[in-house]
Image (cartoon, rainbow, N blue to C red; front, side, top):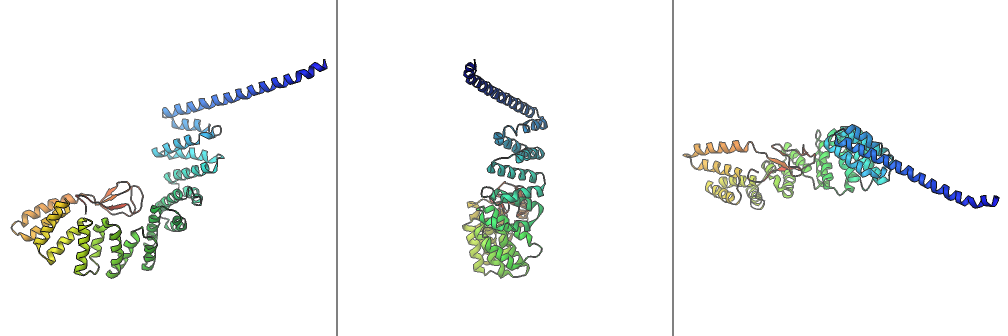
Amino acid sequence: MLEWLFLLLPVAAAYGWFMGKNSVKHTELKERASVTRNLSSGLNFLLTDQEDKAIEQLLELLDIEAATIETYLALANLFRRKGDWDKAIRIHEKLHQLKLAKPQAQQIQYELAKDYFSAGLYDRAESLATPLVKTTRWREPALKQLFSIFTASHDWHKALALQTEVRQSESRSLKIALANMAVEAMQNQPDAIALQQLTDANPLAIRPRFALAKFYLAAEQGDQAKAPLLSIIKQKPQWSADILPLLQQCHFGDDEWYQLLSQLANKQHNVTACALLADWLAEHGSATAAEQFLLDKLQQQPSIRLFQKLLQVRQHQSSAAADALFSVEELVQAYLAKKVLYSCRNCGFKTRQQYWLCPSCQQWETVEPITGIDGR
């Protein structure tokens, strides 16, 4: 009898293993069924615009289904784009509490920093974004996020403390932003030496050179202002509309001024340069030469502003037609007075006022003079 018991032991063990395995499978199936029900319930709440209930339902699944992180990130980003920052924050905060792999954890930290910034919680956003600056993958996005924070709060000196990290980045926009923030930091106490150093260290940015030239012009040192202004025109000919009036305050010989205007008018087809060159021809040559120059340019490049200049030249030539031409010029001027002068090349924002920081997309030095038939 005892021998039979020993023979039955393996059978009992096998039976126990089989039943145990079935029990585990049954438990897993129950858990998966529960997850499926909760997920379906959460999605139903979303589809019926019961977003708060949907979030609560879906967040309960996080501890069970951590593998679905990308789904939750997409959902949170959807809420953020809709402006529902509190909902995005709740999801990202819950994700941030999970023990995840480093790449996922850093991504969630960055996304949460963006949520806090959107909600106006700048201190929280800064505390999350700052450590990411030390990482290779998130250095550039984190720096851009921090610069957005410092721009909103006008903490220019905090941005300048990150200049080493910015130089390690390959981002052109970050380097231009840093140069602009440096100019902002010295707005109350401009210094020629500091502005010159800033100009030399940031060849991509035009604002330090613009600020340096304005400093010299305010001090009635036109000769010193000439070089930075000419370098801006060489790099960004589209800025001639704003730079040429400043260069007129500098000391130019007649031939030097003529050569500059000719190059901009004939090679860059700049409308402001064409108008100024017509004035030069009328003064140093004849009104007929100025008129013929404008007619040629209008055939090559239709422009309302050059047409206005032609009307002005003809008024001086014909006193009999002066009154009629003056009335037409007034109509043209009324038309131009309503036209925008600047446009952001990044987001398309249009304005009559010049901004170093685009009010729409918050990018530095992207708002530039417009070209085309109404351009300058």
